[in-house]
Length: 502
Image (cartoon, rainbow, N blue to C red):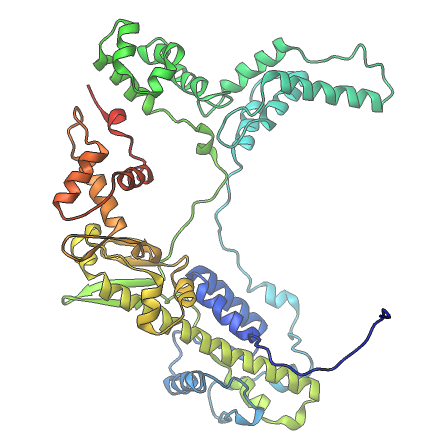
């Protein structure tokens, strides 16, 4: 068979998603702050979008715009002739010649100096420099020689964000001396008599670094980190320091009696010293983290009014959009525009119409999902987390008549303000465990039960996993011991032997 290229024509059908549907799905996924920024950006790039001001008293115009936005959910093409004219005596008519601006490419008239006078600055939060910047600032206050400053910079570069030294001293010396050798070779200098750094200098610099803030920085392991913090607190001669230095493995295993025998003290004294050590910070570098605090603005609000739980959208800060009447009137006369202008106007007008409809659809979908959650989880709002019922995305999707992926987008990164605090929407979704009564109990509610059982237990005789299983069985909850152990680990609760007090 002869190889070669050929062309053929065939007909077929395939499904393609409209790009605007992608935009609608993205808007459904956006949290409140992201949506706010997205709408502000759309206001800048689409002249057919207008911002509804709070003092706008033209209610009739707003109602008509809302009616236009909600009509025709399947047809989004808006012909130029379908735009209603605006009366000449309408107060919204501007003195600016909008037709000239449109035809001239939307150039803003007026000198830049006039616009700059209206600009203003707004204070914003500033990110912290991080641990490395903080250490360099402290080193700059010390009287270090140029040679020490070079070595100090090498040490700072090898300290992780948690405050630990990532390399041993031999590795640090090898790297910095190798850099000295390469620099000398590049300058054609003799490498035999170079001023290489010694181990004594490295140990001296390590002591300087470990004397900086926060206490424990520059440690090579957990034990050294805790010892440095005790030294900073002037407790280096206590039983806690001795336990860290000589009985660290027994301390980690909570073998209080064995440590007491070796140190000649009582188990109660050992446990008090262990409590003192537990208050230290195992990762001191994170106290100087450069990350900004994250703020959450709830997208929804659930409030109890007259015995009923009502759901509200927290969208007061979201820009309210409508179609610009001025540009609609300009677009009505098609004879003034070239085919290129007509295509631009049609695309922008359709995009504005679509955006307004997408916003309304987002509001409707979020309210629909939250109303079902409130109806399903009413016992949670009334009595607490132990009465949280198991719920899945598929259940919500089946009841409200939407796809499971749509419900997932609605609940992703969204928060709701409730009488029981600000909670992520994902909080209300969890698996369930059957009870003797035939009802299911949420896994989150069982975790809360385990946490309360551990909190109320006798410290001298803590509850084992099997004991927790038996207590839950008396309440009609059938659960395996390994499941209790898994939930306990997720709650960061130690085993019974590790929780025991003397």
